[in-house]
Image 1 (tube, rainbow, N blue to C red):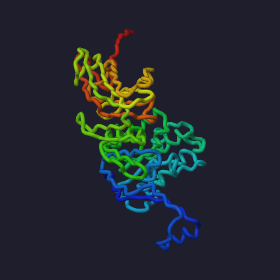
Image 2 (image 1 turned 180 degrees about the vertical axis):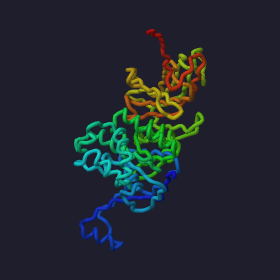
Image 3 (image 1 turned 90 degrees about the horizontal axis):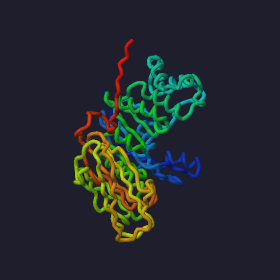
Length: 408
């Protein structure tokens, strides 16, 4: 059976009362109002289809964790409903359900028991859980002696010991080491191939793009956007950089949804990719010397101007990016009306495929202090293999392979 769920008009309010008498009275008397009422979710509706993977993103306080707790049944909504089809496995708060005084092994039986599995069923997978967690002798030690990474290893191993119909993961994986994150994502992909539906909360844009078919953006308790993962994550990046007098817009350009945001003191006027012959090119060869030329105009005098750029693959994952703050080429005190051309020369050491360029005009090393203009899908180009040995992957890094034959 494949998992599915429907979230219909879900809202959650936390209420504070002047005292216990008033709180108890509110259960029986409709007109008793709380001293304070805080809505953390309002009118959230979306669905998760069988076998689908949906990512949820949003800033801290957007309501992501509260929504997952409502979906998993650990918190009740104030309004609305959630309908679930299939068995859910969830990793929400790190160590949730673990008893710190029990050993890792004992907590496996305890946690899996809470998930509805019998001791006999857990017996059949306990060795697999221990092997997957890879914490060695600590498996027999109290969980209070564990690091956060070790707790996450055991929690993930338990939650995924049996393939669920729906797998729900909060930010817990972010505390793990790189090796275990790769291992965990491999298991998630394996489950997805077998039909498991996925609800995945993360600030990691690359993980959202790699794992999810759709993305949902929550902001201050509201569902702001629901759609293509790259479009939603681009909008989210623009949202966190938004200033009081900036704006965000999304337009159809270069065959996709282009996100632009910023306060407008400086803008990209033109952008083009030139091949090794000095011609504007849509297609370039693997390893070919190319130039990315970006023309910028300053519309209002500013203290500093920094150009940043990134090259993204078709999934929206950044292959390479930097800016002129890091290269120590900051333009100081550019005046209104000034124009500049940035010429970025590099080899297209990329795998075969389609790529896009994002640009950022900012004041220093990040777009969080002043975002003059951020533009995704500013340019789209393709890399083809013309004269290189066949290879797989997103990076051209042709090796020199030597073979020696030994005789006994």
